[in-house]
Structure formats: structure tokens, C-alpha cells
Image 1 (cartoon, each protein chain N blue to C red):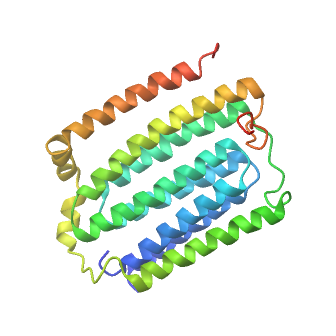
Image 2: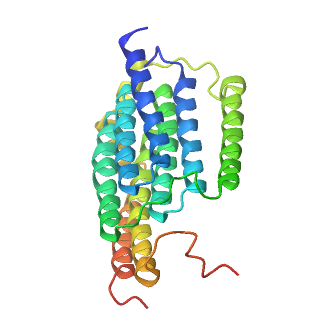
Amino acid sequence: MNAEFILFIVLALIAAVSSVMMITRSNAVISAVFLVLNFFALAGLYLLLNAQFISVVQVIVYAGAIMVLFLFVLMLLRTENEPKVFLDKRPLKLFAILITVFVFIQVSYLIFVGKPSGNLTPDEMKSIDAGTIQTIGKELYTNYIIPFEVAGFLLLAATIGAMVLAKKKFE
Amino acid sequence: MSSIPIEYFLILSAFMFVVGITGVLIRRNAIVVFMCIELMLNSANLTLVTFSSYLGNPIGQIFVFFVMTVAAAEAAVGLAIIIAVFRNKLTVNIDEINIFKW
């Protein structure tokens, strides 16, 4: 029981509980705020995994930009609250939960018995080196320059597409 | 990091993914369904970063970078579509948006 392990338990609990809270709240804005909490917990977990660059980007892009967009649209449309999530169509929803619990049991069996990771012994020095912005930047601008350019083009196309779609006269 | 078994990260990621699927299945608000998809993307990211970090290989984190790019584009276009639908139907309840249903 060292500090790292306690930190992992706390962050994992925050991530798990906030994701469950997110899908059970009837008010969509509260759901969005719980999702932001979940993203922050994930950023902490990324730091624990020595992925500094991804951790910072997670906070800036996900918890910042994307969630602000979501909250903006939620408040713009001002959707009415759903009735309590389990009040209508109860058998159908219970069936959905049954299926996902089954999937979860299958996946956890695979993880703990099938051991996809084998007997991995992490190398702390190598993993610290892999997460820095120097390493990632070097890879991005040398071996992955074409995917990087394509990603930029994708963002441009998405910007134009979003503007066209949300324009006033849509036909 | 080395004191935490890799299985713990993987099981947390699997749990979040399953919660995301449940949310897509049981929620009726289209925007919340969208947020559940973001949750699933994030749980996949957690798996990628975990393996990248335990193997000491930066490729997984570069892949996460691209996943984030696609997620940002998808959120922008998806929310624009939801706004366009809302303008026509005055609702985002996916039970009432069924004009493609035969």
C-alpha cells in the first residue's frame, strides 16, 4: 500500500462513480458536469501512467473545449428533463443492463484469466521517456506526418461541415 | 506505476466502456447519448495509454492523440446535426425522431 496505489484507487473510484452517476441523472446538464469530473479523473490516471502530454491534452481538449460545446448546446436547446431513467419501459431497460453486465463479465474473465498482457514488467524509465512531449512531437512530425496532416484536414472539414449543418436555412 | 497491476487499469476501462453502452441503450436524450459515446471513446483511450506506458512505447499515445482529434470533429458535426434536427422537430428525444422508421 504505497501512495501510488492509494492515488490509483481514489481516481479509479471517482471515474467509475461519476460515469455511473452520469447515466442515471435525469437532468442532462448534471450528466454533463459528471462527465467533466470523469474526464478530470482520467487525466489524473494518465499522469499516474507517466503520460504527461496526453493528460494535459485531456484537460484542455476534452474537459475544456468539447464539454463546453456540449454544455453550450444543452443550454441553447434547453431540453426538458427526462422522466426518472427507470420509470418508463422498465423491462426493456433492465434487459439492456442485463446484456451489458454479461458483456462486462465476459471482458473481465478475458482480462483476469486470458491475460492479454502476459507477464508484463514495466520499465519505469522507458515509460517516463515515452510520455514526454519531446518523444510524441518527434514521432508526430517524422513517422506520423501524413496522419497528422490528414487530422488537420479532418478538423477543417468538420468545422465547415458543422457551420453548414447548423446554418439557419437548412435544406 | 509499477506497483499497480495492469489488470486494474484494464478492468476500470472495461467498466467505463460498459457504462457507456448502458447509457446509449437506456437514455432518451440525444445529447446524453452523444456524451455516452464520448465516455466510451475515453475508456478506449485509457486502455491505449495503459499499454503504451507499460510497454514504454509512445505509439499508443500518438494513437490517443488522433482519437481525440476525431472525437472533437465528431462532437462538432454531431451537435450541428442535433441542432438541425431540433430546428425541424423541436425535440431531441430519440423516441420521437423516427421519420426513417418504416
